[in-house]
Image 1 (tube, one colour):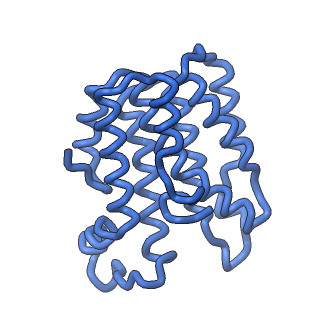
Image 2 (cartoon, helix red, strand yellow):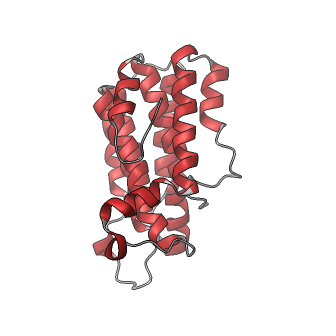
Length: 210
């Protein structure tokens, strides 16, 4: 498969061939790689509650292991998560960092919870879009060695450069690996555990934050 950071046609096609729970599992795996970004923001800004997002994502993993979906609980967890997603306008610090990355982590988990109720490919794409937004926001500003900007080369060239960045390449490879295995594996305990923990990055996120 040929996944692209900014184009989701290939991903949507792959998701369309998966059972509903397998689609949710793909989204949950993405969220595990995003959640440390929220933790980093919360620690640096002394704001938010990572345990709320962790609890919500844990519920998704329990559903993937056979727990019945409780729609009322899912709705409540979505509301809880929305309450702890930062709004950049609420912070006055000129040195505010990782706010977008934290927002996208929270939004991704909300969308994954929503997918437990409506597991369409399009709903899962919303989670993948949070991954793209995270890398797109972080690389031009958080990687000091990245010297490409839209003002210098235009949007298309900037996106091409970000797509070639090691974080983006690694993430696309991980998504491809997950999808390939999801095509052939049952969601038994061992495989769900693998999906949850297989991103071996010393507890860091897809952009190396923790």
